[in-house]
Amino acid sequence: MPTADSEFELEFSDLEDPLDFLDSPTWSQRLKSYVNRSKNYLKKWYYVTPFNTGIELQTWNGTELQDDDDNDHIFDNIGVVRAKKKTYIWKWITFVLSIIATLLLSILVISSLKHKQKKLTHSAAKLEPGSTSFKTLVISLDGFHPGYISELRTPFLNQLFTPSNQINDTLVAPYMIPSFPSQTFPNHWTMITGQFPHHHGIIANRFWDSKNDVEFQINDISSRMNTFWNQSYPLWFFTNEIHLNTHTHMWPGSEQIHSDPLRNPTIVDSFNIDEPLNDKLNTIRTALQNESTTLTFAYVPVVDTMGHKYGNLIDSGHSKVLKEVDDFLEQLFADVDENVNILVISDHGMSTILKENVYVWETLFGDLSTIPAIVKLYDDANTLIYTNQEDMETAYKQLDPHIPEQCELVRSTDIFPDVSNEIIHERIPQLLITCEPGYQIVRQSKYDKLPKRFGTHGFRKDHPDMRSLFLGKGPFFADLRSNLNDQYIKPFDNIQIFSLLLQLCGTDDIDVNVDADLKFWKHLIPLGKFSEVSKSMWENYPDSEFNKLWNNYIEETISEKPSATTSSIATSTISPTSSTIHDSTPTSERHPSLGEIIDEVEDTINDILHKIWPSNDKGND
Image (cartoon, rainbow, N blue to C red; front, side, top):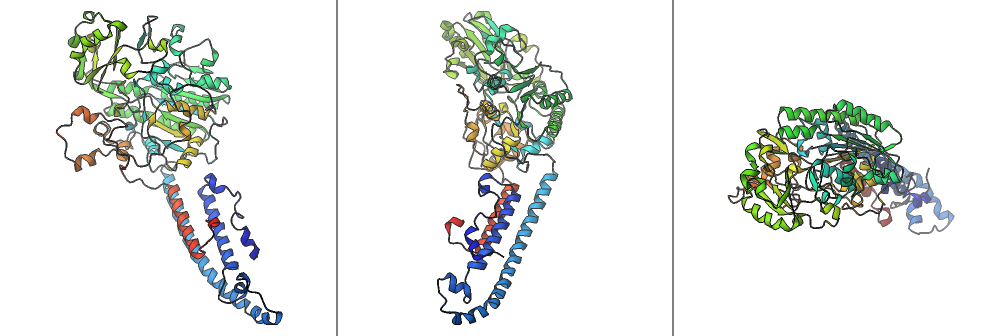
C-alpha cells in the first residue's frame, strides 16, 4: 500500500515519459495518463486531506502528540476513521469510473462509425520531417479542378476532402493557386523549381526566344531545347547532390537530357498520352518497390484531355473519366505502404468556351501583315505579341482601340516588372492580350477548326476556374496535422510545393534563390473559419464538396437583393484576396473530429478530478 511520502512523487511517476503531453500522444496514451492521474489524486486525498478527527489532522497540521498515554485513545479510533473514509472513497471511485466508462464507450462508438466509412491505413509512428527513410510520391492530375470533387463522381477523393475524414495523416487545402499563365508546362516547372514562370524561363506552353529565333515546343526534347530549361534548378538537381534517386513518370520537363548529370532524374519514363491508368498504376507500384528510389513523380493527363474536349461543364463523358481517376487513386492508396508520403496535386483548372464567344483576330485588327510592328504572335488563352522594342508603343496604339470589352491589352512590363535575367527577358513578349475565362482571341485558321464547345486554361491565376488541387497523405502530413489541430490549411501559391518537397527529402537547408518560402511548411496557418461567395463556382460545380463546405453564394443571394450595378464580369471575377471571401464567416458548421471529442473528454474528466481534489498548487495544473 502506498505511503504518505509518495505524495511528493505523484506528478509524473506513472508516466512512461514525463514529456508525453508535449509530444501529441495518442488518445489511448492520454486516457491511460488520466487514469493514473486519477489514482494519484485519490492517493493524495487519502493521505493528505484531513478529517475533523484522526491522526491526519494532528500530524499534517503540525500538531504534536503530547505523550504516549494521551495518544492511546487516538489510535484506538483510527480503524473507524479509515473505514468511514474508505466507504466515502469507494463511492467517489464508483462515480468517476462510471463516467469514464460512459465517455470511453461513446468514443469507441464514434470511432467505429467513422472508420466504417472507408478502411484506409495510416501511420501511427512519429516522423521527423525530412527523414529520408520515407519515400515520397507526387501525383499530378493535369487540369483537375478541386470543384470536380463530389460524393457522386469521386467518392474516394470526397471522403478525404470532407470534415468527416478521420484519417489523421491527411492534409487538404480548399484549393491551390496556380502561377500565371495557368498552363501545364509553366506550372509543372514552377512546382519543382519554386520559381514563377517569368523567373524560371518556361513562360508558356508556346513562346519564342527572340534573340536566338527559336520557338519553344513542348513535344521537342532535342538538345536545342536545353537552353530553355537551364535558367533554373529542378528539385532533382539538389537530391542528386546528396545521392537521393528520383524516378519521373511523364513529368513535364523531365525528359530533357542535359550534359550536367545533376540536371537529370535518375529514372525517366517517356510521355505516352494513350497510357491506360492500369498500366500507370503498375509503373508507380514498380517505382515505389525500388529501394533505391526516394522520390517518384507521376503525371496523369486524362482529366486535362477530357477538359479540353468538354470544358468544365459536367456531363456523362466528364463524369466517367473523373470516376476512373478516382478509382485509380483509391487503388493506388490501398497498395502504397503507409509510410510513403503522397501528394495529389494539379497544375490548373479548366474553363468552358463556346465558339460564339471566340473573337477572330482578323475581324478585330485586320490581317497581321497590316501591323508591321508585330514580328511574332501566339494565339492561345493569352495572345502573346512580340514586337521590336522600339515599335511596342506603336503596336499598342494600333491594337488598343479594337480590344473587346472582355479582354485587355497589357504591356509585359506591367505584369512582369522584375525580370532581371537577360536570357529570360528575350522570351517575354512585349504585349499580351488577356481575356476573361470563357473568351478567347484566335486567328481565322484556328477558329475554323474549333468545335462549338471546348475547354481551355491559361487565364489569370486568381479566377476560380483556374484553381488547382492539393491533398497530402502520409506520416509527414500526420505530423503537420497534429500540430495544426486542423485537417485544412489556407490556400497557397503552388511555388510552395518546391519547399514542401525539399523538406520531405531533408534538403530544405539549401542556399538557393527562389520565389518559394523555404520555411513555409514550418509555419503553416490552419484554415480556421473560411468562406467565400462565388457565383461561378456554384454554377460550374453545383454539387461539389467545395460549395457545400465554403461557398456562401446561395445564402448571400437569398439574404441580399442583387445589385443592378454589378456586371457579370465583376460577379465572376473572384480572387483569393477579394472582399468576397469572408474569413470570419464559416460556410457551414464543421463537425468535431475524433481528436476534438477526445479533448472534450479530457477536459470533462479533469473537471471531475478537480472537484474531488481542488488543488492549490500551480505546479500540479
